[in-house]
Image (cartoon, rainbow, N blue to C red; front, top):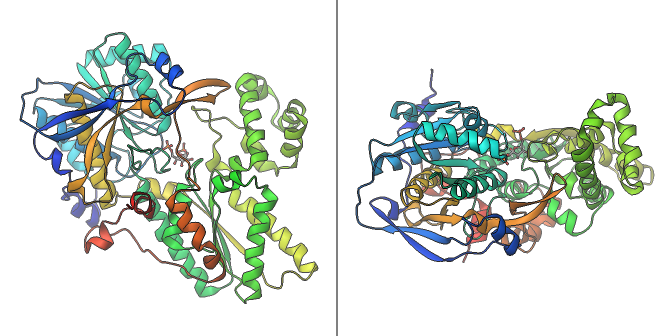
Length: 547
Ligand code: FBP
């Protein structure tokens, strides 16, 4: 395989570890924990893995460990740094005992159920250190939730002599990791399950998990390109760029990119919901900024739009909730209906308020809302072209305002969607170090006999040597939510907090950014050079962790 010069140079990079993990460690246990909400229900559902203490690793005496085999799964969307989690895990278990073996299950949780796996040897691991992507073993979105899947998994784990399974995934995959941990514990199968917090979306975080891996690199990659677009836009001065950013529900990516690049407009879905804004309110807000800039002679600008926006417009949210429940119960009937009749069919089945909204949507958006959910029951928001929907509606409003003399400029739009471009970027120094530490920490949780824990690395705005490594019981992050029409225990998704420091910093500046052209051009991720260029964590983390 031909390698780029950067790949070759990066292969030699040794990720930094927290000081406590550099030698032998001991697990320090904290107080018993509670789930974030619905304690009684969660406790009943997880009798073996509920209430466990927080773990912190501190320097300790060297010990001997009997040989063991470990399995690893990459689950869900790609996020930069996955290969470093695996290399940290590999190095960790080899340090415990060089006879230990690591097996990777192929193409996500499906590989466990279908018994597709490979041994990850030192040669293979070395090819993938500090690289982006999940291609070392591939990823998939099979949901591990049924007993027969757990049993099929157990068969192969037993056959390979695997003592512990590490599931690298987002909130849904870690929820499943916890269900699996509970199941194996209840059956006394002697198999531990450990989770690792992955997702570019940044929505798997809480007091103990400061950030999910991949968020740093993905946001820096998008911010580089947004900065380039801003500069192009400020050079030609003739386009409004509507840029949709991945992130599923939460607007963390859009907010972080806004903090890095200072665009003229950034919509935050969580604010739209809190202010009960309609689609028309959003369109009016954008059109007003366009009109004001035009009045000052600036017929150009940039707008950032989070991909989950549609689901946060309260009227749309009610519609989607009814659609989710309806399709969960009547999916088969719906799919048997001719495509050209499906829209009519849905309109005839919805409540009058939702039917009216559904009927008013452009064909493409309506269709997308009724298409297959992902295996976790989510609308596939990345397929909805919100950037085009908004710019078309803004154009229509501006045309009406022109007639009334309220808009005097020109409006020409360009559209972009940044998502897949950032998910497999080579991990930034932050993600390279963070992921390696998460994987290494997972090996220590395994060595200490833990199950149902998520690997946790905190104090991440300090230099890596001062990071705090440990484990958080997954049940601690859970609450009950409605999924596929039923109440289920799930890890609580972290949305943008409107009273949080990152949003407040943005809100204090956005009117200035709307009027003035205050763009910032972050440029590409740097791996070698001054630390303030190469090792900065995200603005989100810096604001959140500022003491
Ligand atoms: P995860 O939550 O699995 O990490 O996925 C992240 C994500 O990139 C979302 O931002 C996006 O909505 C979705 O995956 C796209 O899914 P797919 O890769 O299946 O097209």
